[in-house]
Image (spheres, rainbow, N blue to C red):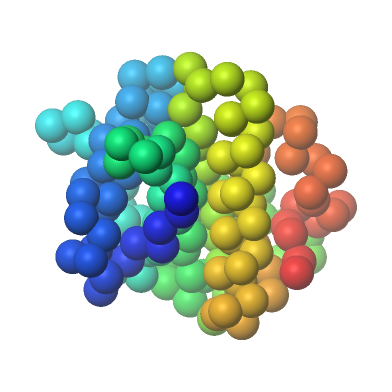
Length: 159
């Protein structure tokens, strides 16, 4: 099941907000060896603001097995702030209909079929979120060649 977690609704989602920070620590810091901030086994950065939206996939026991963070581009976001030289050409103007996808992760010790299912459900959740919130474009960076099929030549997904 995927939960859409925000600062405004986190109190209705039980432990989902804290658990996604713990998942990020396990996935990005412990497994991927990213050098990013963490505290008490929770990974975070300067983009975890009230504007962030978290799509959190939890199993029946409530354990986060996958997640995505979405950031509106009318607030500071990663690509523009940290890697402006990697922005798509032509430059996509920030605004309420352009969002960034960050911290996409799926637990690696799951079966391949479950990892594919979680990934597909998270991508579909992004699409559903975009329809409900009038989002026309997602920006993201990925080192994975599998994402190339999703991207047009400018390095973004337009819906």
